[in-house]
Length: 465
Image (tube, rainbow, N blue to C red; front, side):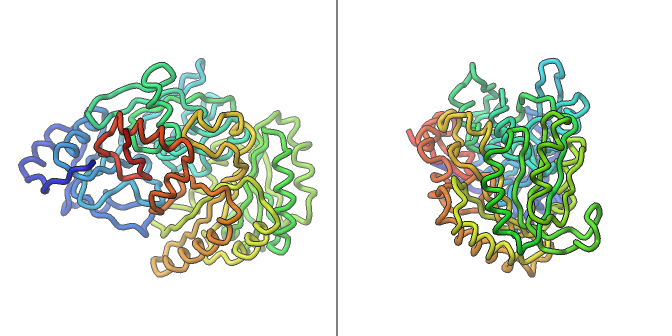
């Protein structure tokens, strides 16, 4: 159940503003357009109020205000959500950006992170101690959104998903309580937040297990589009047998017109694999020898680098404010029919920043049971995301149609589900497909912690007793 009431009066809003230390931005304020802007500029929402929270007390006050006023409530962490679910029309946005502290315990190998931090802040703080937390592939991504949906990236095969390295969360619930959830307290809530998204409250703090990752060997190997079918068949077999220390995601991409790429490749459409080897440095040459030897690479740009350098390598290519449309699926196999569909549609990338990635999710991600967390596709081997991206609003239709056509061609070959971190507004059935047999348990936990569905501006799990 949800309740919507008439808009709160200016006096009620002023009273709320007096209870928080952070800024309360209203429609018409000078800061409003900047405060409401989204990472995906294809989506334009106009919230009534934006609470820029600076501490947990602000979050508690904001949740209570939205609940009591009957306002739609959205929560924004790092703000990277492709579907624009960090905002809501005519409602209240809880903006956590100012709550971005990171504290590393090098002896315990843990990292405590506030809910508004981005992964770049985590990488910077942890790297000083030779540590890293498994996350994504772009350092401007928010910690909260990526973690709550699962989290896969450069270290997935070695150390699992981000949620597999989550030890504890602090959560402001719909009733205003702040609770700690871990393996010993609120175990059902801790289970639910490891993949169930922002359905259960506002996570103000995460505690992660960190791993001894300092310098890695990584970078791209690129091949001609003419070789794409052969590369995909080779990659399909190679990565499954590769040591867990080696991660590599396949991509269709257009070579950016900038260093370190050589000028003769600038703006050329290619296929490739972006590698991250986190094993013993003395074995790197041995691990990469069959990769460099396969086919006729246009570029084998693999070399030692600090882990944060790889994590931030795509940041400049994907700044906030571009047009985005994406679709995602899981795949257990990459058969020849699926590869043929990739070859056809991948070559038709409509803009320089449009791309397709196949992330391997075997290795350590397979060590966790399907029902140990809500993230239910432990039996899949790849997560595929197709992204249409461009800075020009005039190309919004072009990139959207390409992504849809590509996705519809591949979906019949997929495992049938969805990844909530890479979804637009695709309907309730796709949400259920993301969780499969874990959905009923999530719905029961939702009914316990948020029975009136206050936290519904997300890939929503509807409360069911």
